[in-house]
Length: 471
Image 1 (cartoon, one colour):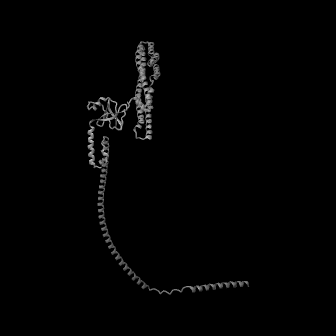
Image 2: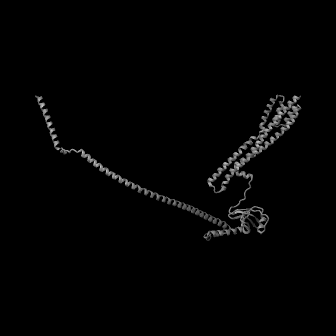
């Protein structure tokens, strides 16, 4: 029973759902738009005919448009060609005008450059003229002509200025070309100022006479003159009296603005003093080298002469077989040669090779005596230029220190360091060169003496051997 009820319930629900779906479909159909009217069927033949007519019309239209466009394009090409030709003509004309303007501009630039050069030349000439005016005016003003710095002279034209300057210079040259006397003041030898007569020879020399004081005058600075030490008293008095002596001493000067100082004599001691301590050291070494060279010369001269004397006497005694007397003669004469000869004579009874070895050993013993002072002289010859170089470096350091402190305005401040730099080098070379020369000569002489001693010893050996053979 329950089964039947459940089945009926399910069926009822299904029916209800079906009814609901049918109602929803009906409602949707009622709300949808009505369908369009049916389209009548087209005639195929008529459609083709209409399409052909439309194509022909469109083709005719496009053909007409193409022909029109071609005509317009050709007209445009012709017009463009004409405009291009006209533009090229105008361009050529403009280029010609530009070239002409450039040429004109170049000519104008050349004219401007030439004008600038002329202006610069004029300015240079103007500067040269102004400098000439100033220099000439200053030179002539020193001679007492003071009109060339006035406003009246400056306001004149150039030709007038030059004419006046040349006339004044010619007159002054004529005046200065003569010997003239004029009263004036000058300083005497003791430094006092005296009134007297000044005899001027042009503008380059002067003589002064003041009572018994007379002589050549020299610049004392700032336009003043002073009496110079010379034997020109009679010549100065003669010129002041208007006489013309045959010959007079003269002191030429360029200007009276700078004082002339009497220079010190350039003695050797002054030169060494200017070089400083290092120069004195080099000088002392030079004196030592000179003394040693003299002593060595005396010693080598004695050794050389004794060799000849001993050889002649010993050779005579050995020929006679008097070896004892020969040995006594060597001892009596003494010296290096005597000792070498004594060594040879004492061993004459030995074989020759042994005797020669003994002689060589004896010469080696005398080598120190023959080379006495030689090494010291050569050391001085080597050290002297090095000390000179040291003095040069020291002097240059002093010079640069002075330049750093005072600048280069006054050359006198630099002369001290420069003199040390140059003088020490000079003295060093002056010592080294003779020391080197005489040192080598004396060394060569010593070597020659040693060779002579060896020859003398061999001569004695040969004489003894000859004597034995003949005996």
